[in-house]
Amino acid sequence: MRELRSRWSALAAGIEAATPAGRDRAVDALRALAILGVVLGHWLVTSLTAADGGLRGTSPLSHMPWLAPVSWVFQTLAVFFLVGGHVAALGYTSARERGTSYGAWVGQRLGRLFRPVAAVLVLWTVVAGGMLVGGAELDTVRTLVKLVLSPLWFLLVFAALTAATPLVARLSPVWPAVVVAGVDGWRFGLGGPEWIGWANVAAGWLVPFTLGAAWSRGALARRGRLLLLVGGAATATATLVLWGGYPASMVGVPGAPVSNLNPPTLAAVAFGLVQCGLALLARDRLARLMRRPSAWAKAALVNLSAMTVFLWHQTAMMAVTALGLLVPVRLPGLHTPPDSLGWTAARVVWLPVFAASLGLCWAAFRTHERARRSRPAGVTAARCVPRTSVEEKLHA
Image (cartoon, rainbow, N blue to C red):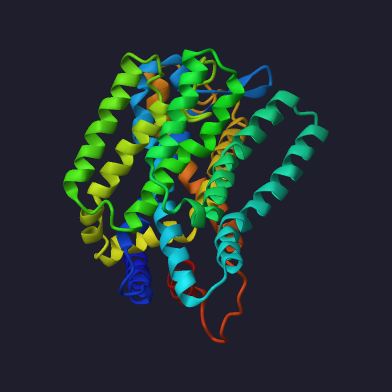
């Protein structure tokens, strides 16, 4: 144990030394919290139950809707888009000042997003094909592949908004919010077609993205303005849920007639603004916390492998679930229906096991998140990670 602490202290010191002096560490802390929130949220509200020799996807929110507040804590994608807009706006401005072309800038940023995707797609193509050849039920394979691929929509939207940064960086968040309100009014108030709701996939996430760009310009520096944002957005969210007919859950619930997330609704956008406002209010405290080398090292390491963690967290959960089928009884919180507090308590116990499985995925696939570069002779892997990753890959 003492040796592990010593090695961690050395790693934290190395990351601290490699971090540029002017780096805004609170931004990285917010990004890390957003990614971890999504991961924990998926692990808590996604369940694979054993039925008829296969696996079926369901959610505890279908059986226990009063657990909806869990989604308020762990549906943190708005904060991720807030940070993304902030970093993209600053990065593009910096690139222009250095004389870097738009093509080179956007190619570098999108490369960081999509390099790790290829490994996921290749592995799951092989796994799905092997399962079908081996006689697995088509519904089981479809359920598993959907869980793996469904989070990729977020990458596509995020990539599109990042590429559009020169066009949207100066856009007020009010305008995409107005689009969301108009689309919802058409869908729910005037009986418009359901497909029109998918316009909110772009407009809904453009709200926190452009809010992040406004943050980069210093438009959100006043605490009073942030308190007004949080108060107004919280009031709007409560009004829409209590009297507007919107569901309380901020994630999709299987079987529910309306989802706040697929596509985003006005309630989800208003709630996302609450989260963004709270995140901005907390940034000074986070900045002070990140001055501690140990705390900063944890946030930095999550950021170094943010896409790997995001892309493989569902695979990690499914691997544990599949291995659990080898046990002759159904394991509580893993294969049993999520219809009681007992299931919830059991699922919490499984979280460290999911995390360990994710750690194995991280060890196997994290290299796909970094651009290939030659390593200087005589430099060990432990020393190379802080210097190359923190100074170059984390540089926004």
